[in-house]
Length: 193
Picture (tube, rainbow, N blue to C red):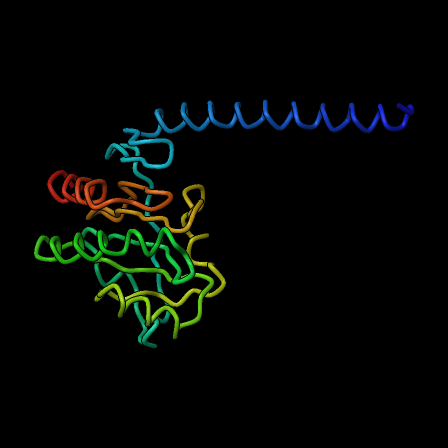
């Protein structure tokens, strides 16, 4: 083996080792920071204690149907925000759970809003019709609304947030959620503020 080839092989092996160690370190950091931040449901799901809840951003803009909407109109209510796209297979999987929790919690003052990202309105409206989604969704083709969540910005599609009556982020779900997970989190926030 030539000197150059040995050097290239050594660089590749070293880069792979650094990458593996980096992933292990990030997993450990993620676990410890998730535990410190609140009750950990898993690495990608958190329910935050009331004393540690950051203020949620106000979301505003045009919905898929063209109406103007602001989450400020639901001040004092529990709000569930779901980032999704019609192109997203996990979004299709979780849509029935979102519809069920939305319908079942409406009388308790819970309001749902979707944020359709990197999508076109026709495909998104078709998705909503197919899955019976009755709550409004923002049209966010550039995925800018998620940036308003700062350090808790969506890390996967879908991502779901439960915002308490005081306008604070109470729970975060990165990736598809299930009926049981979301229903439990929403019920906890409705009952305990």
